[in-house]
Image (cartoon, rainbow, N blue to C red; front, side, top):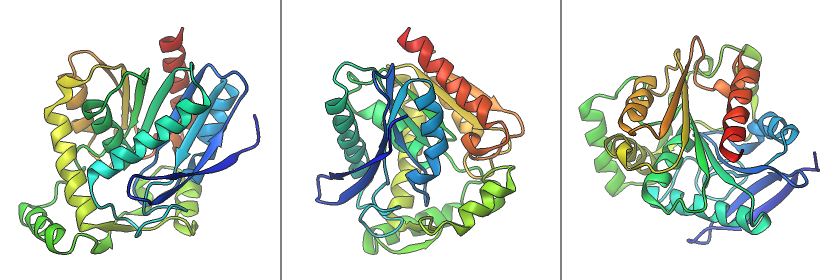
Length: 278
């Protein structure tokens, strides 16, 4: 594995997005990774190292308002801007590796973003996608009055943030991982009214438009995820007209790549990529 390198991207609105690249010589494939709400790309180092061992390079940036990237914590001006940020990352990776198959990988909020990206944007440059515990629906749906109130505040106070109400022990079955998350100075628990309302809406839109998917997707979820809905993932796969392979990890919580079966999860992803580039 080569040494980790940092890079910066400038988003369409001028926001600086801080990224890392884990590169190998002559990779078989490239992954562009989009992380979840409140976290940052540093939590995926072991994921990148696993793929490096399997001759796969990985690129990722901290989402705007997350980690070392610019922007108010937990906020985006629009969902569309998040999709544009993914496009910037893909262009950066493609400039580095002109002829290598590229895959998108999104977890949780990143799963929402990647799912919407492949349904809405050009996928000519993308060989496939890996979508982990996507926020298509929440595990417990908020009451109607709460979503209506959020829509009102999204219009008048879009950058107003509040706690995402995450329960640390809902992340994984591994207490060491959960405690590290709790103590991580780059982690935050913020979500703005705009980020919530737009991602909530676009998750539902993705479910209604799953039949539009045109690239191979591996989507997976833990059966004990109390943050995002595993049923919604299963419904998306069912509606995708055969383009989505769905895997439910028994007993696993919200972060399969960090849970007790993480080696098996990462192997499943690597095997899936190997099949698609064979």
